[in-house]
Image (cartoon, rainbow, N blue to C red; front, top):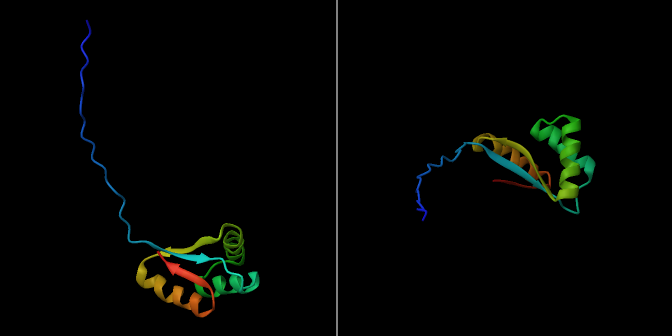
Length: 91
């Protein structure tokens, strides 16, 4: 006859808590690729290539994180993107 032993283990889980937020840019049917690229270069300080890749991702995937950082730094950039007619939010 065999004995079955049950062992309970307590596992502590630590969550990574960061101060980073993200600006997410969403696809729309209004803005051109060129406008989106120009605004990402101007407002988010992207390189032309980086902005182009973000625009492609937004077009095909529906959204793309275009900037990460602390909220006080991202807020004016997000507002500027919105003022330029882009659909952007901070998450």
